[in-house]
Structure formats: structure tokens, C-alpha cells
Length: 182
Image (cartoon, rainbow, N blue to C red; front, side, top):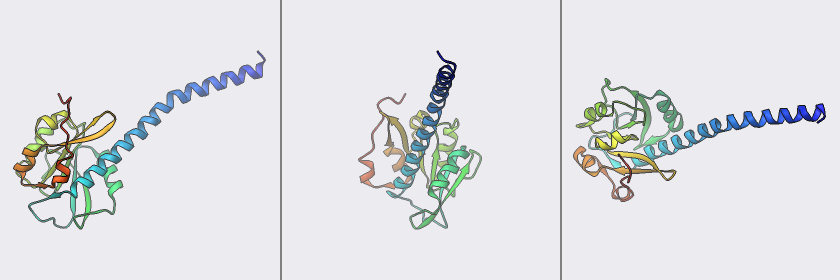
């Protein structure tokens, strides 16, 4: 093989090797962003189908538990949006924070202390969303899960009824209990 062809083949091989190693990460990052965008849309849209007992005050406060990146992502995607005629404000919270200002509490997949948050919201006017199996098992309100590459949701009717929140029937009928929640 000629030296120029050999150099070309080596460079082409290196380029293919590098692109094969990098594209999965780029693909995963784009997929993660797409999934987070869909979940953010779920949080926003589902809130349109809920009536809270207490009137909403200055802002519609969406709280995100212990995940600054998710809180920043949701804030960026909902910046300037209104819900129930109130400007949406996204707040990062920890298990030690007072959650009374929250209208919605989102517990991402990576949260280890789901039970601590759910106990604190039990007698408050807060809609809870979660992604982990422990959230589902501990009777959180709306469980977001992936099945067959689709994001689905399950609404725990008993927990919602106990909270006093009113979720419209149109949304309740779309709820699907996961078949594989362990």
C-alpha cells in the first residue's frame, strides 16, 4: 500500500473509532434532554387538570427535590410561563426545607429519601410527582415511568383523594398502573 493511502486509511480508521466512541454519549445526552423535556411538559400539563383546596398566592411554585440540574432545566424550559394565572417559579428543595409554598413537588429518579418528602407533604396541598419505584410503592400521587420507550404515568387515586386535591376525570382515565413495578 502506498504511504499516502496508508496514512488516509489510518486517519479514516481513527476517525471512525473516535466517532463510534463519542456518538453514543452525544446520543444519550440528546435522549436524556428529550426525556426531561417530556417530563417537564407532563408536570406543566398535568397541573392544568388539578384543583387545589387553597387558593394560589403570588406564584405557582414547582419544587424539585435535591436535584439542582433538574430544577435548572425545568426553570429554563418553563421560564415566563403561567399556570392558573400565576407565574411559575421553580425552587430547589431538600428534605429539611419547609414545603408549604410548593404546589407541586417533583421527586426525580435519583432521590434516596423519597419517604422523608412524602411524609412532609401528607397533610399539605401539594401534588407529588415521582419517578422511582420507591415513590410508587410509598403511594406518591403521580408516578412517571418508562415502558416500551414511552413515558407513562400512574395516578394513585387513594392518595389523591386523601390529599383533597381534585384531578379531573379526563386525566384519571389515562392513568395506567405499571406492570413491572417491583
